[in-house]
Image (cartoon, rainbow, N blue to C red; front, side):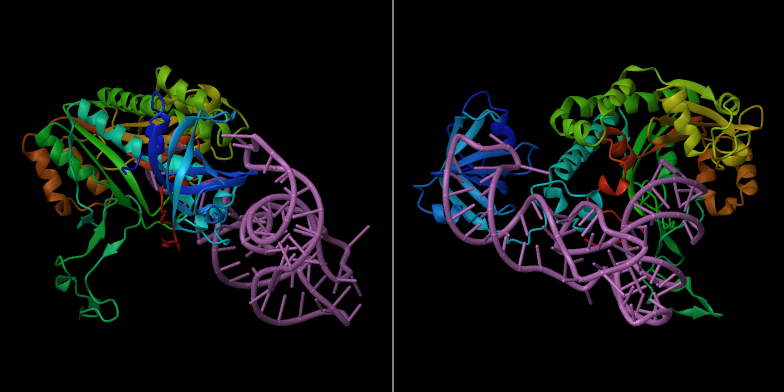
Length: 460
RNA sequence: UCCCCAGUAGCUCAGCAGGCAGAGCAGGUGGCUGUUAACCACCGCGUCCGUGGUUCGAAUCCGCGCUGGGGAGCCA
């Protein structure tokens, strides 16, 4: 008999009659002449209640079923007299795939996120993490759908890169050499004998390659894994995370901001529309303000202010910040959150940052003091998107590379894109996990990815 | 990497002016019940993170280490 998923069962107009369900037992309660089984198969947050009657052939076996056990149920879908559910299954047959012994770590109560991280192999079976990973899947789909609907071309940028100074944190080196006994030349490791003939690393960003593709295909985006070997221990950083990076030819900073705002609104609306049930769990148990925050994101026009104005606002607030504010200093998380949560009470975009605090590839403005950078800042998270119009003038670009300690000859291919048919273009980067945090209210990035990689943590 | 906090039963946590290790949940047994994190009674459950030290005596005080959490830096 063909298996029916609980999600399609519960969304049916009427009874589907005789059905076959397969899943895991959430909890079981015994009554006088039958047993109530809550069954979940991961297709949705909701369980289905299965009634096993005492006169079933294997009722004694059924009564031994524990939380976490895996079963197959064949039975009749019927309306339920109980208050908590519309439908239930009157079982005809229950086949046990496997009993979960009594040391099954997940109980019928709330566990701490810290404990669940230690059992990453089992936590997707909880309501909260099941909901999280279903939303993550929908969000990935929404990202692709948004760009596809706008005619963007999805590109896959390399995971292994030969650029060793992209300036975005520490790199993970990739090698095929025997680290116990590497070939040496004058006392140094001889990389000419490594796999690529030179040192290689895991990518810290697909942006530079995405620019090359945009300057051929127009509008492109990458959505892939990114790696930072930074020894950072915070609730917002991981060694391996996923990043969405669009890049648009013939697009200036203003168009870039328009696009970033449309993106955030689209994916927020998509999740609110398609993940209502899973989202309600987070609104109830994780962040009481969640729905309000999401509605503000979709309805409010994002405030746009230049960095200089943002500094003026922050300077006018006295005795509030731990870190000083003045022109030429980057905004701290506390400053960003003050602007989004307290001052404007909605998302905002800060643009035209001092060039001294931004990387070489951002376009230098006419004032020669600022660059055409923009950060989208949202309540609770702070910066969620960072982007810029790119420097398309080859002489200015080379000058900026030298100023920031980067050897232009290592990036001959990047400079070539400015030599042959250079055009103004823009792009931005979004941390996929930070989007997840924004949309679910989950406060630790380790809880929005199935198997997080952080310093000292590579289990599962 | 820096600062702060924590580590006690399978889980959540109490015990910490030094004096026999506790509760709820989970598990087991029995009862009751179209039940809803069901309910009632009884039962078992410990390297008190590790390691040195102070003390007649340390879960409790002190040093070091490990692990986890929060914050910072870096950033996404």
